[in-house]
Length: 379
Image (cartoon, rainbow, N blue to C red; front, side):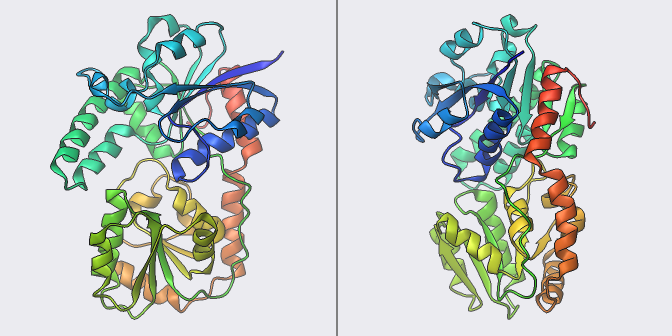
């Protein structure tokens, strides 16, 4: 019997040029290889229609995201209401195939009684109300702060309302615990789908420390600035910050540090080259929900990784990282590791952890079991 699946994406999942679309994109070929007939539905707002997606799917449909005042609501978060589409709902009602919603963003249909008896699954990339609360905390612009706070409050109520209406698939165990408290009793841990990365044999020593990320994101800019001002302010160790769209403020903060430099908007090849050549990838975070793709990338392709608790908690990858808590401990760990070669034993540890967790074939089979056998495992 053929297995058909509707997948609703919050954005067009190609090109794979930022962390949020890796799981969305690499899930498609993994499911196709298992014989799943995918009917893909994408909200498009600037990335364009992508013919490459047709090779993995039986059908691909695009819908505009409504970025206007009409998407403001007292009942729905903006990220959900702006992705409501009558055309999408009518198309989904033409059959009885299961529906996988990529992110809370795509769950508008869970409020529609016509889908009450449908098999519905939601991929949780973050606990969104917590994520937006962190955006509020680390954003300075008044209008953005108001938006992030309002969205966080709406999301908390909304996520509670939908918690019992679908099966939820989390990327870390900690997010599952949050949804259990919100009232969900159908939750499963499902690791990210990734490129065919293998742990690089990056033994020996690199020649600098690296922080990388999308520097236009307030949290990432804050982390980079904090590292410059409080960690590398008196360390005589080369420090590189690399990422998209750095602000003038961040650029100016580096002028007073002779050991630090900034590489703005590196292409994918250059970024991967930096990750591989660094001796230490430094990955502090202020947001403890979801999993950080830049951490996974650094573990597969780099040497030592220094993280704080929000970066690593609940990921299952704690053994492969070095934990620091404040500026003093970051300095201490970095100073110790900078003189410590990355060994074959370090590589073997990562291989055991990562190859077991991030196996696209195994994870695709787990997802299929959840959908078509209606079993939830891994709680």
